[in-house]
Length: 380
Ligand code: UD1
Ligand code: UDP
Image (cartoon, rainbow, N blue to C red; front, side, top):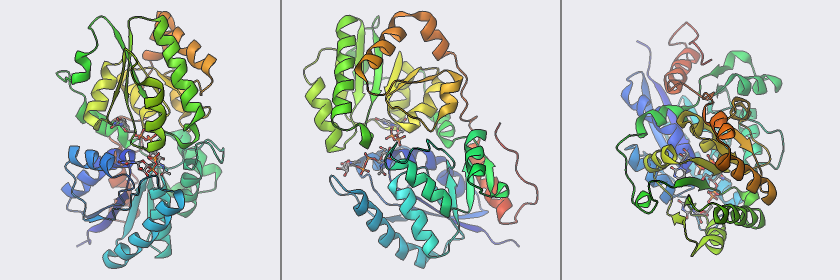
């Protein structure tokens, strides 16, 4: 009989938890695998919100978060704490996700113990070292060390091939973000913040947290949003503010006391997906939001100068506006005032997945370990 494959999933922040949750759940259901779930808790509250929604109880919680933590602190704490867990558990493979500092440090910890690594959401690139910072280097370094690559799209596979990673080890799977989305959006959904917005008014959902936007870029972008709000009496902003003190400071300084701006706590993912589904459009510098919005038919003004998700720009859902106030004002005004522009962005097809990424990832792992002989079909 073929031995079950011991798969250790390691994640630590909100987006990793949301996109790893379908994989953790599928591993737990499938007797061909022995799952071990490890969280770094690089995020504490925002991670716990996601764990609760998906009913995931980690086997190990490294509990590393500190207020205002530096990148070196996150890296060193994960590296040390995960080393002990790896020694004890001896997994056949470690799965990491995306581009956070937990992702890279966990991959490095596994490499030091010569444990193979599978990278979920591999191959995303801007090719700009500091943009986004430190994520672009986190994902490139992770891919240098990884053994198996789960690329969400053909374009991310091509990026990996450009770096001479072996084609045999790359699987195009779609993004697990879309798997999660299939479970969360519900037509009956209600949230208290919606009671504050009259039915005939429009809502823009905002998120902004990237390190390179903190401080002045964020201040000028939020002020540009206020200018547009003043010119449109039927428009509201809902902004669930990330718990980073650097983000909280600017969001409250610009928006506190403003009519039609609703600053709220970070939402759990069910709330976020449902509010996104009820928004008129979204403004965000988030990575995950760029993947989800096309499935919901919502335009996104991306508050960044570069994106590792060009498929959404090509499809027409995403528009890169950066943090220049004139560009932000112009893009918002066009979307609010010109139905042709709006309809073109809202009508695009989702290029990021079909809801079956998790199945493909598990099948690829089985194929890699010789449990199955036929290479699994890919997402196209
Ligand atoms: C991290 C990731 C980023 C990802 C983002 C998703 C790195 C370097 N950055 O950025 O790629 O886009 O998560 O949200 O890996 N905090 C809390 N409670 C929480 C979460 C955060 O209090 O639940 C506060 C803490 O003071 C913490 C600070 O936020 O020190 C910053 O958290 P950190 O994980 O370092 O950076 P993020 O900006 O969240
Ligand atoms: N999200 C959430 N609550 C919020 C804001 C976002 O659950 O208040 C979800 C969103 O649907 C997406 C993920 O968090 O799945 C994106 O995470 P984040 O923007 O923190 O990180 P990034 O994707 O930029 O790394």
